Image (cartoon, rainbow, N blue to C red; front, side, top):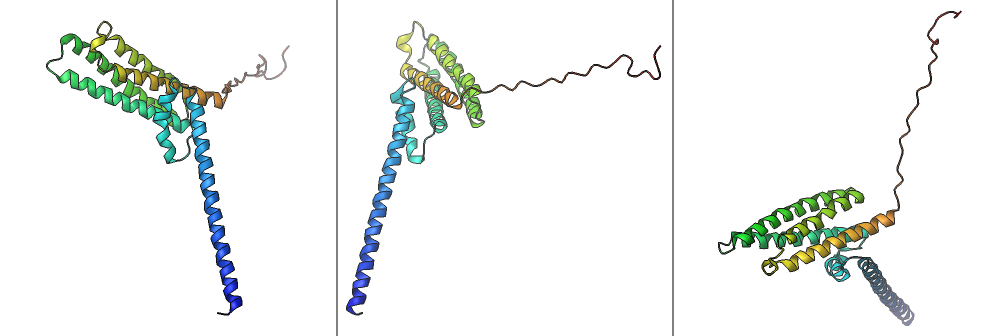
Length: 217
């Protein structure tokens, strides 16, 4: 290879190397910007919820799985509520099975077990509504979660010291509130739905004599 060929080869290699560094640098910068924007969007979304800190803690891990939309954020928060409910039901079941548990405590726990089963059923129905983009139904369904949680809490009135899963109950309430807040955000973004009023066709007036053949005197 002569001097000219070597020079051309070296120049070409250097150019390609610099171009590759620039491409990688720009790609890293783009990824950083995208991640920053996702984090910023999530922070803004969670700031409008009942418990912003809990919202960020439960939804942020899903940033690693791609972009976060309000609907995906809602899915994540509903699932977090579902998991919290199952954990609490495990605590309740374990305590009910203990022979040392007093009758009064068992009575309260039995009420809570029924209420928390209602929460699981409601979450299932809510997920179906979300899958159908029916957020009005999702809001109505999910509102029952807070009612069920409140009924369980009321069962421990005067027995606060025995309400050993009160922290989990409060977490469930906060998660439920977050879900309802995100649903409200989605509904607001969608705008008011135009109600389609069905048109009712008015039958034309038929003359009394329309079916009479011949002249009428």
